[in-house]
Length: 285
Image (cartoon, rainbow, N blue to C red):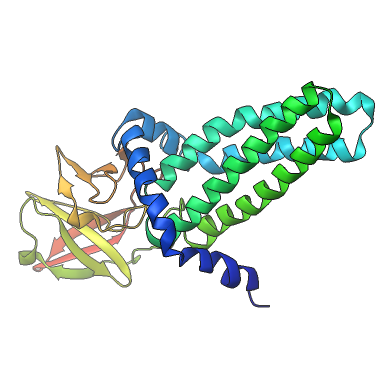
């Protein structure tokens, strides 16, 4: 079966160039509010968690609003306070969820940024409708409150689908090195004389891009594809024995561990040696 919805809708949104007139200034504001290299950026990205923070937070929001809707539809009068509490819980959880999503969206571009813009507008609309629903419920107009919640849930569901397209269709938030692998046996990737002292050098092992750095008799080898958005690390810079990604500032130690986000996954490390004038690598032992 063809993925009709993706091709007819999500990919059309990707091609909506006029959205850039809205997305560009909003993205600049987001970057100013959540600057690269800041503790806030790392916290919202999920660097401390080991994977992006935004997806699990969305489960809290959607779960609360879904439960509220089910109580509205299937519950009786005794379940009304619980439904109201769940609406409020979803609204409260939507704040950190939106902030983490904004942080992730600030690092997108092109079609992904456009889909993210519509995704954010949908989420904002759903949030406003649920806030209005809560006030209607508190004011005694339960019918109006339920209608507002239902409309907000429908919009949130569509927006969640777009979020799924960003993650699973566009690879936003996934570990970009997840499917890279180094050869199990020692494999030559370039002549040792091509490896200058202290210079970030690119090579390839089979289909995996490799970053090499020579320090005296020692050679460090990492996956050259940044785990955050896939940028080439050899185009970045060496800073106090760390490698800084040229795209979004993710910083890694020479063993691949993370110093600073927004990356949430470390860089794969490879064993490296020089034999008979050849630089060889293999999967880390």
